[in-house]
Length: 440
Image (tube, rainbow, N blue to C red):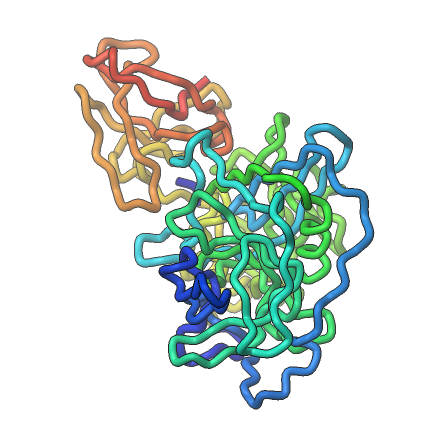
């Protein structure tokens, strides 16, 4: 529910997250991979047959394997969180998951409907290396070194650059998984990650990160929970990779550890976000959205830096409490950009400061004393929007005889500040129970 590039992209749909062995074109008798499914746009395609470093298996670090590894992937957070449930290892990596489809959802499937709410790696199987030539490409669940992708016309290109490829069991196909960055795959390192919604369903990682994850989880069938919402610690703090930059969540100025960084409160999210005071211009950082200087919503005489809305970061919907809006530059209102500014989409379950911000025309207060929640009265059922919004549910009002519509959830990570994910009965149909974002 929370929700023009300088890169040189391919002019056609590139590919790489295979379907199951048979449907992806894997020949079970020869072991050859005949065709792949799309992976999405790829920066810097090189197709002259001189692949250089892309056909070299990258070294795997000699690190201690984890005793009981588990992974949580956050699509909106663009993070992969690997922990050892039997040890102290706890590390977060940046990722580039599936691009956003016409329904506003990432092409990377969440695991919420899977048994136990998780998918699994098959890193308990023997790791495989791709063959050294295009016609010796192999299919496997667990690659130590994968190079080749096969186009629908039979052309093979080593976009995986000799890095690990770790498939997941459980999604709609057996092809989704973790692999290298694909972009700039002929670099000696294996490429460079664009941290955004860029793939066709797989989760891309930096070269150093995918080899570490591969080394740490070998020998285990690892549970992988994939969720849309930003993953949060018990304290409510967002799980992130650091270092902080514009619109990183924060609790104090000290969390915004870059030049000029300050932590500003967003009343719609109930949390802080990092920004920089500005007169007209803002600095940019490689791998992050372009920034823009806008009027401070609390004092229009001052300016603050926010991110511009980018296709590869799903506009502004991955930032809690921000909306995409055409705004003028601070000090130069005639120069406009589509930027991420504090606000609400105004649907059921979204935060609000006034009833006029809600499509339903009703904003109920929460115990937080700041933003309320958009809702509407109901007798049994509530309206839903498209799949990119949370499903709604009609529950008893806290104090009153009627019903109210609120958002459904899978875990507390799906719920805004001032609510928690709880089992609740339907108004006038008490035997029907759903998990909803219930005001404290």
